[in-house]
Image (cartoon, rainbow, N blue to C red):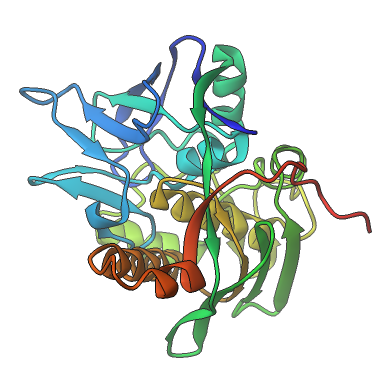
Length: 307
């Protein structure tokens, strides 16, 4: 049986926000069982707390933002992906600003922060959300769907409007080991023309060659890619972070085509909406059981299937 986990000790880091350009200090603190993930704005009066859940998603343009009572925390997806990938269930994130530091544009620095703090098992069983029926979200030529599976798998395809990039696809059977070695270090990216436009609109104020893969007409402008398909792998990273807003690991196969945060979060909200409907109608237990149900982890561990 798998148990929930929190941190052994607090761990802190400092960096700039991708969109605000402001320096932010972040501290991860242990939390009690069943606490989940929450963000605390210690720079504001009364230090308001925002829970990381679908109901608190307020924006998903260019990054995922949660908010409550007019208070926001921006760019949470890379940190949330690190929590998901490392199996960290309960944590309080303290921030002295409105944005999670971008660091190098990947989840790798947050993975190292979690490793530094260490993980502690809590004597409460961990539950999984097992998808039982196909669910699809579409917009224009973009789509994302989730179908039943015994473990979390991701198949992601991106088509880039760039002659040197074209289409990239990646498929992963997600495990802690796979996340650390194949996904966590993949950086966010931007095209020069788009970055210039975002800055004119006061976005990406903290973006630089140090925290993103920057692409011009001739290709990547700031060194080598960490993986040949690093860009689409980063989309997988974003997806894992957005899915973790559901508050527990998901068992299902996600198939995404040029999706991005907007569709990721719409899928998350639709899953939560279906669950809320079912919870409001307890007499319809058959429907609940058929669509999705929390599970204790199976006796066998969820390993990457041999190739």
